[in-house]
Figure (cartoon, rainbow, N blue to C red):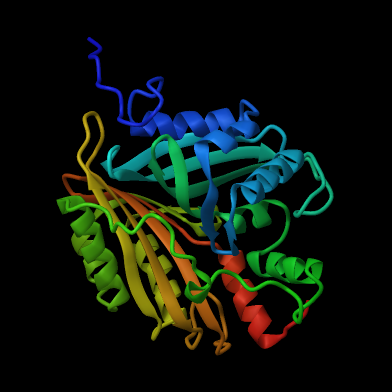
Amino acid sequence: MMTTQKPMTGFDPKFRDFPDYIIGITKEIWEDRGIATLHHYYSDDIIVRSPSSIVQGNQGVIAATMATLAEFPNRTLFAEDVIWSGTPETGMLSSHRIYSTAIHAGNGIYGQATGTPLYYRIIADCHAQDNQINDEWLIRDQGAIALQLGWSPKEYAHHVIAQEGGHETASRPFAPEDDILGPYQGTGNDNVWGAKLTEILQRIMAADFTVIPECYDRAAHLFYPNAETGISHDTADAFWMGLRASFPNATFTIHHTIGRDDPMMPPRAALRWSLDGTHDGWGRYGKPSGARVYIMGMTHAEFGPWGLRREYTLFDDTAIWKQILLHTGENL
């Protein structure tokens, strides 16, 4: 039996709750072609941070949306989950995990149209209040897109640098010194599952990899950048070891933590985190380059009776390679 829910203060009553708002406006903007609704749903001075850049202002968001739809006109955005914290009165932060499909049907930043079907994940952290989003952190699995179009993430980074005129003129990916102070200053909520995922990642980044067999379900399903998937402890160990080994002295910071227990859902958590330091170790990115690298990362996890049972971690491998290549000056 359906129950009547009190409308969210300050939000359009057509949305029954915050996940319904986030999922609904995403479909309305992208799939229903309501691009003009961005004037309504996004604040004029919204700040959007991604691994490749930081953009302020709704006009830039609208332009980027149209450019993406020109290149991928049939793009779909399927909501896998919305993990959120806050209240309508004080503002809410959603960590929205999306599985996107598209066909590369138009010319654009990925080159001449190829007709290639694409499948990739996105996680978007959005702050909303009074029916508007005004602060955003966005990670798209650019590595997965590049691989499906025939490039490695490193080759795609070379392509972007060349498109931007070479090493001297290419834009640098996002770094914390570029950040703009936005309206959202929260750090999440106080919940046992957010604390559990925080403990797991902190132990991994402190080189305590025993946490993986201790805290992961032996049948855990794992989803990583470049659309890599796997199962069980060895996959998790190889992924996290390869990342940390590349940046053994980088500073690991957790910026935002959400944990939730919701009806008909497993206990779950969402973290936004970063690694900031020098590429001074052998690992995921090969020979140490000495490049200063900033990694914006997000992790979603679901828990069950035998530990962490699903993990979704995203960062943009192409933005990491771009930082390395801009430092080394390497050309294809």
